[in-house]
Length: 190
Length: 175
Image (cartoon, rainbow over all chains, first blue to last red):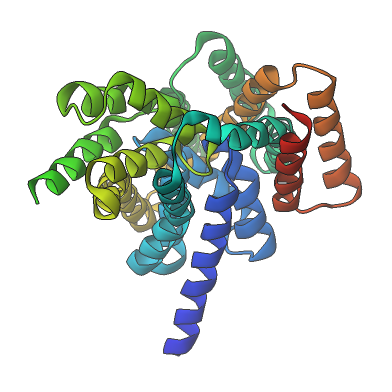
């Protein structure tokens, strides 16, 4: 029993370590990797749950990758899970930077990393795009959700609204709509 | 000891007030590291940023590790990194606990999440568009994107393998 639990935590740690090690080029680059490890490979999360976790992680301060990992870790294994997830995500960065800081002489030595990143960006573009499309049908189901989607995308691209505000506003509208509908339904039944 | 605590607190502040993640946190880090604590001068700080952006993982974590190391070695980097991650850890655990507790009892929570899923898709798409706009600048980059597309759709390639090979490709073709 204890062994089974421990091996689960180790497996989770390894998954987050892999995600941390290959998240190049900013927080959103980890979305395709997390989807692969958490939703597809290990089936620890449903697609809807994954979307909800991203929403919360985007709305609070801190690095999105850390927020998302801690949330998933907690969901899968409580406080211990959250700690394993946090260390798994952070450790690859931590070790890489320590390695560089130790051997580092001048900036020109990081040109290899620069070139690698330049090569990776176009790939990440496609990977994130494909993650968005594969999650699409779990989020856009009816006419209202399309309206919310188009308005959000417009506001994000052209008005540069802070994501947390969008999530709060559309979330509250959703709550009022839902409760209002319930009330109407109840009156009908009376 | 006081230096370790200072490192922890400075980066704790960065983690706590760093809304919007990544690049939005950079001015906060600069303020703590260069202006308030004078751990690095501006040029050194720029070097740290350059490295933090091109290595794996969140920029804020990378910068914290690097600055911590420069100030107080390995232990310093541990304190700084824990500091920057701690606010996320506490806030997320608190929210996750509340959501878990009330989700099944209060319908409003479910309505809230249903309504924001399209927003999340828009967020992910926006991130993709921004990266695409800034990175697909020539025939080389377009080729990498096209090969990635073919790889994941026709060959069902693993994203990690895709990232690895495009990084290798980048090292080989750029000079």
